[in-house]
Image 1 (tube, one colour):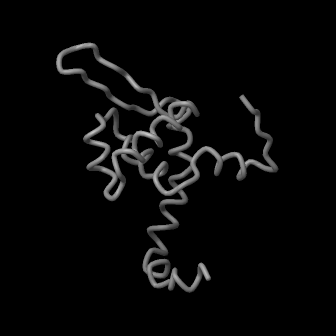
Image 2 (image 1 turned 180 degrees about the vertical axis):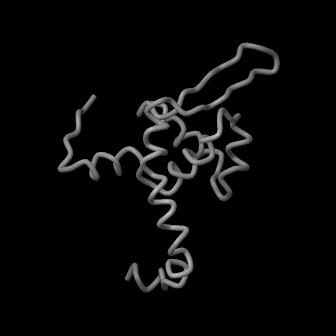
Length: 115
């Protein structure tokens, strides 16, 4: 497995939480464990495949714990690890900033900004 080095703490943090969905998954898990279907409903727009991939990456990074209950029917729950809780705490101010500036952010012509 290739080890990665980072230029600063922000670089390291973005590597762990980067992408559109991980922050929303972390937010959905902040109040306690959730099953796959609950997460799918809590994160509108995410496909089943992408949710599976993101949860696997987050489990590998140590942010999420996957608990399998051996029963019929099988039950799997996802929860935040202590490491995941620390990231959620760190992201809270960013979420507050987004709430405060949402109207302005929504008015950005995103198609033009990407050209």
